[in-house]
Length: 136
Image (cartoon, rainbow, N blue to C red; front, side):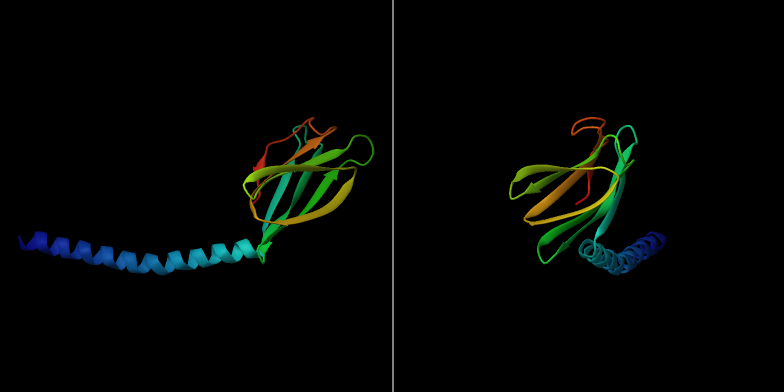
């Protein structure tokens, strides 16, 4: 009987100690996550399906506005690379794209954005498109 009580007390003590230790750790990770979202998230290299074009960049939120700076790369001359962005904003999806030849840097921003997906294509708006990735 005494052994059972001692084991139960020891187990309860360890559980309380474990909760006390994990609580500051969880708070620290939550603080780090919120700091990372305001600092920005790097993403990419997201390739077209034939690996002839790719995009990469950074997305961050500041003062209620989401910003994206992206870079596009493909071989200069010949066919163009395309980047697509699909944005969930104010309850609806908005899609837009940009074509480039060679190397390019682009930016865009907006308010009320909850989700952002991107993918890259090469040789046409809808040709040789790669996988879709969530970047925000």
